[in-house]
Image (cartoon, rainbow, N blue to C red; front, side):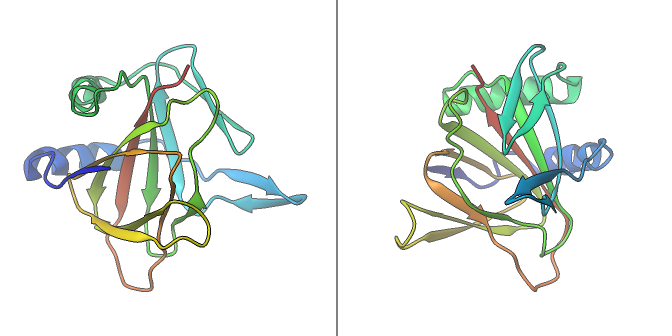
Length: 174
């Protein structure tokens, strides 16, 4: 795990956050034991044309990259030493928006993830597996976390008032 606070300068992070707030965000749903549930965050994505990132039974087809992300993708790919071709963006508007314990271990996705945080600071936890102790990291505005997605991780709920957080998770999809 490699954490770089201030990976982006404050002006660059502010500019990217302002741009990202105006994207077309979706409230996805997934099926669990026959019930349709809302994903507790908003999502959008970009990727190389022809790619499809599938998880939780949902397809996320790549249709190209906006110019605002092209140089950033190259910089993050160099920093993480990984040729990223897809980015999943998650938007957490309040403390009840979260991501529960999970692993990003889809067969078509390489394990290395570069997670760029924008906006409000939120607590990220990771652990080896269920029942193992977890470690916490507060992900700040403009920070970059490079990690192995096969490690269990989550973004915690909080009752505190928090600013909107947008997270860009760069991945390499086969």
